[in-house]
Length: 351
Image 1 (cartoon, rainbow, N blue to C red):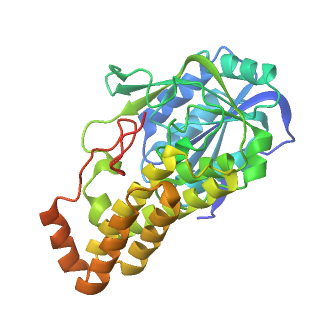
Image 2: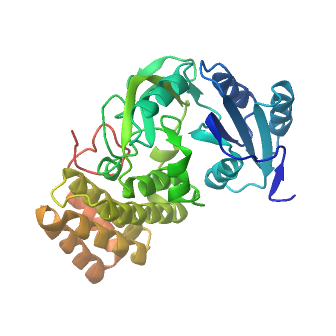
Image 3: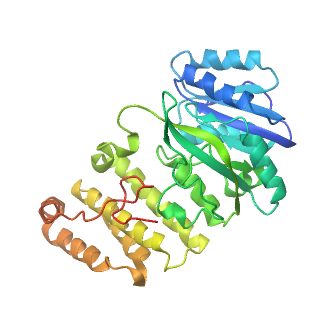
């Protein structure tokens, strides 16, 4: 199969048009719901670009049907299975709109999202991204958190908050196309590619504006979450992905000029230290050392845990990863729970 089979033709940029990009893999019924949440928008003009990432079920047929039923609004393209980042990028390349919306197939937009966010961007020409309040809901539609993460706050820039968590969801923001052109294509990371994407926006100190209204629902599926799975602490491939993310986040934070006294840097230092210890326990010594270097750099002169980092590295060199992991377990190294807005990634609570 060709990498991309186009189902529509790309045209020049259209002022006012909102292009929604929906990557999908084996989710036919969820896709229908996601598309419907865009079609129900009170704002016009819109277009929807569905990117099938190598589905093996009836998803392509559903996408074809949606394109046929909504000719001129829905477009469909296919690619071999490459992951969500390349799928979103394929859609971005086809998008004709002044504004871009990314939407995963299992999430939903509110009817007013585009109206409210485009209006906010029109009123704030110096801002390139508008966001609003996202709720966390379960598969039955019950509200689990409102607002979800930090989406109810008024925040001007992505950093330094990104050092603590990706504090919104992929569907929360509406981007001006011009800012997505500045930061370049989506990366090929299998996990956390959305966090890496936003870090490049944060590195440019792009101004944000909040419309202050409810704009989307993030669906929490039953079962164990991918990010909280035990595999994240033991699987070498996932750990390596996490180390790559940490390095890219740190590089972007430095470019953004995050102040050394920012408390988010101490959070990031503890997170890096924790991932480093997990890598060491799996014998990933080089990755562990990279994390320890990140932890030390992020802690800076304000870090109270630098001695602990140095002590652990000494134990690692002296005893080796297996024995050091046993010592750590016996010592009860985990002293604090992570902040409520974060995944299991740090030991420092955040405001």
